[in-house]
Length: 348
Image 1 (cartoon, rainbow, N blue to C red):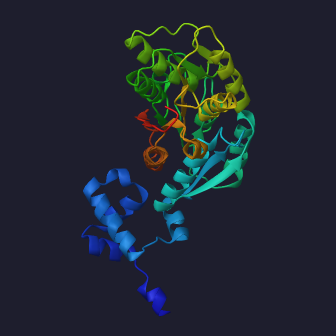
Image 2: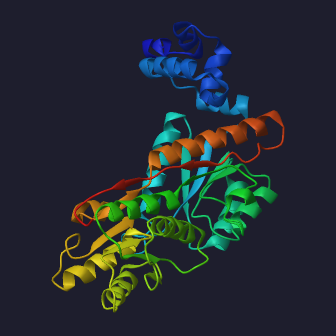
Image 3: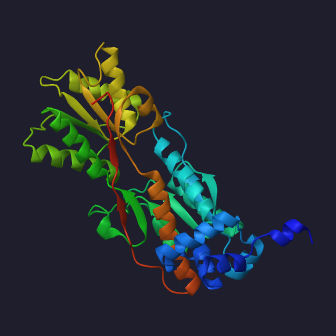
């Protein structure tokens, strides 16, 4: 046996140095939700210090887990739309690796194709779970996975007729979009704006309607007239530019526009600059998602805490998988709604 093999740290080594039992170390690796936070931190610190990695094949036989999680990669639309999901996938992959999971990525153009991929993946791979993104009203993917007994968690609420939260039948994590647009609108009000428009998606989009509600609440609290100050369009730059032009050419144009996405906000930005005007000075505009493009050009935007979302999704999955390992029904919904943050730049 080589000296390297002899020096390789073991589970027993970790347990001895951390002053815990072997079972506690095993729980830290496979079911961290069962371990007290202070103990979890101490054992993880020892694992990092020693560079301990459990033997994957042996652990798979022991736990009957592959430690594989599947997630869909969405195709970019205009270089901006969907960028936030790329950030999420990167964060999920990074945080999963820290827990010794691996993320298996696949592509699909729409929900039915994604469901077909689920069926194939479950047949061809020994997957532990799925992470769904971009949830929406009447989402057939959630029903399919539940019916087939697959472990999963969603980044996004299960949007129902009541707005989603009371319709939940599974574990989910989401970002409070209404809080984000509320803060954005309050920021504009504090800066003296009284005609604040909202550029959103067509009605019926759970995410879009939620974000619109935050803008509307802030305007109503301030006693602002919002008549004629909303436009609902598809999520791309040309649509945002056209809607921005329509608002700017109105009889009583807005002095600021809150947008449901950075794609629409950048469309408005394009129209402002094409007229020889300056965003922030002549017309304020705020987007949502804080895309890399927004940071480059100085667009104020609402940022989603993707690293926290990824951690929370994995925490939820470990609850689901622990129940599955124990042979008990999956845990009831434990919604996690995380606050976003407004990043103020020159445009507002």
